[in-house]
Length: 206
Image: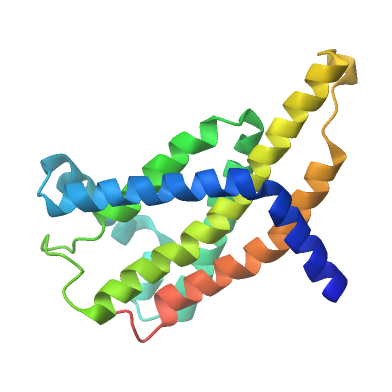
């Protein structure tokens, strides 16, 4: 167990630069969304209403939550974040640049939902403010780890084949970066589950 923890830690350490840049991108874009929505930007407010409106009608997690099926909502949110969010963006990490565009949008959306359906701030009290920011943090961290590890794979793939020549038949993925990606996901999966459980099961969700 200790050996596994050590390997996970070492893998994250090797990816830390890419993980950090993704996390910063999330935070900056989220802050932009918060400022725009609280400033009454028509684009931000209408985007918030459109996104939330669609989620209420079609997102399984939102539908289950409205029906009082909180644990089912958490499970659907967890699977959505992992299989339709993190894994595809991790794979896109091989392009090195593309994930950042998705991250900027995700972070911005996280920011514009800082106002409620009446377009009032969710920062009305400590409990509501803490819940909002803690949920974001719990999601930003595993996303940053997953995407950052994917970008490292892409960077290593580029550097390795640049040195050895770009021959299609000889293209290789750097083995160590793929192994590290696997170790990172050992942490990413439970973190996503914890994030979803807190979001939908916490008594702080008011």
